[in-house]
Image (cartoon, rainbow, N blue to C red; front, top):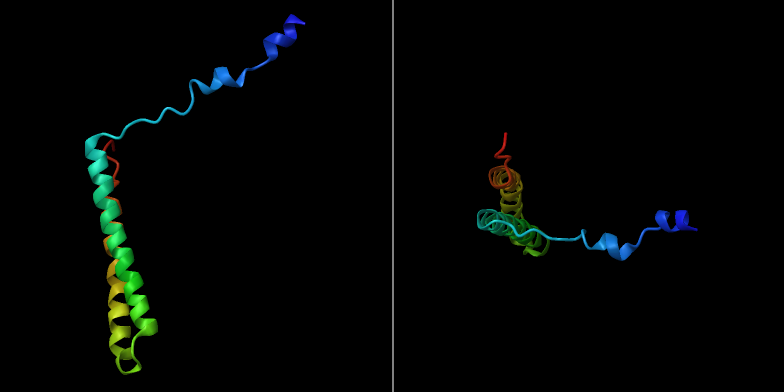
Length: 92
């Protein structure tokens, strides 16, 4: 009987050591905020360019295509630049 009690695990005992969130340092918080802002801005620009392409007047469809192609060409390098700069590994 005592051997069976030794093999039992109480979940309440285990949950005390789990789930403690660590606070980000101010530098990392600022880095994350700036990165989120830049990435959100780029996402909004891409979405707006797509909306203009879909719902723009037929007389300006060529201009809309040019704008969309420009955004499609420029947005991925900006995103990778931001991600690479703000989330680089400083230990290496």
